[in-house]
Length: 192
Image (cartoon, rainbow, N blue to C red; front, side, top):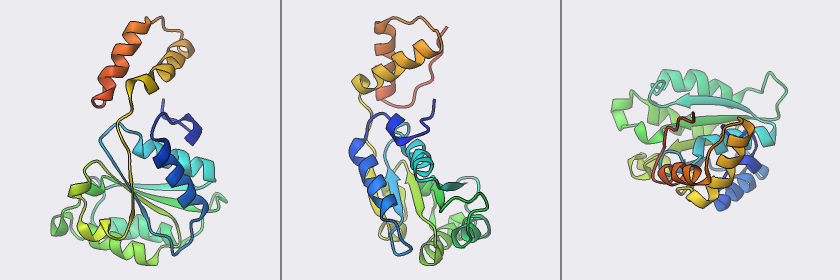
């Protein structure tokens, strides 16, 4: 149930407004965004929804899988200076798990991202769960946007809508319990 459009995202209104303003005013001189907050707060979903709303393609790199200098240069670097083949006006370069880069241990990934910042002609968003684990040199070159935990009362209407859509009978008390457990972190829920 990942939201497709920003209007479908629950919670974090101030963060979403900052993202929209950044995207609408984006130029090659704009700083990259660094979205940070606990897992399950909607950072990655919001970045994808922003790209959808702007008509941008997404080129996504997960730092834990592809954080070597050569992978970042090959995938994100070439995407950052070329036009979209689909006709989209821009390509959003999305680098997830930016807090999983650790200097030389990442085999040059942090330096490749810094080089990307200097040469890109496309918008860049980094995503991190732990802002304190993001290398300082990356943080200092980004505009930071914090995502906060989504309150249970905000999730409840969306859970009800999903239950109705899936034709699942679920009491309000059960939905409230799901929302409250999700408020403290990502939750896996099985509706039967």
